[in-house]
Image (cartoon, rainbow, N blue to C red; front, side, top):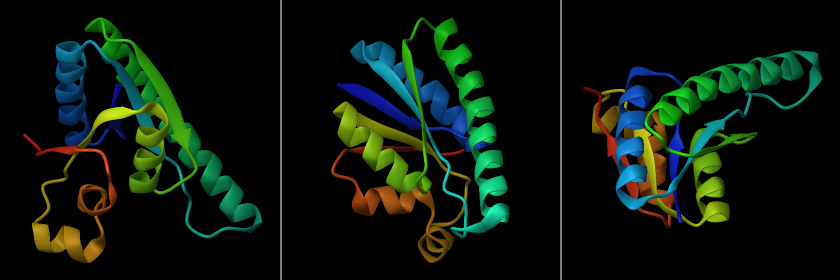
Amino acid sequence: MTVVLGYDESPGAERALRVAIEVSVAFGELLVLVYGAAAPGGTGEEYRTHHEALRQAGRTALDHAVQTAATAGVPTAVEIIDEKPAEALIEAASRHGARVIVVGSWGESPIRGALLGSTPHKLLHLSDVPVLCVPTG
């Protein structure tokens, strides 16, 4: 089993990273760091440019998370998935047999999350794997 973390370097993701490391240490499990890199749109040069920029942002963010986990002695795997964040996390959790999906929140209200479709809100409704939503600190 593994621990899957959605990570994007936001303040909520930073706190979620610390919690995911604690969970990985407690269970002695691999931490799978996931970045959903779906660009809006779907065709043309503008889409390709935006898509590559998202993938590069994901690589940069995940490199930081890998370094933080390595300092704590936690082994990691990295995945940049061309899906929206919630779908990317569900896909990775399924492939890796995840024990839990860990995500941070942005501190938005439950109603705002429901209306705008926040990643934690989507995961709570769509995931077969338990979801640990870490509030901002």
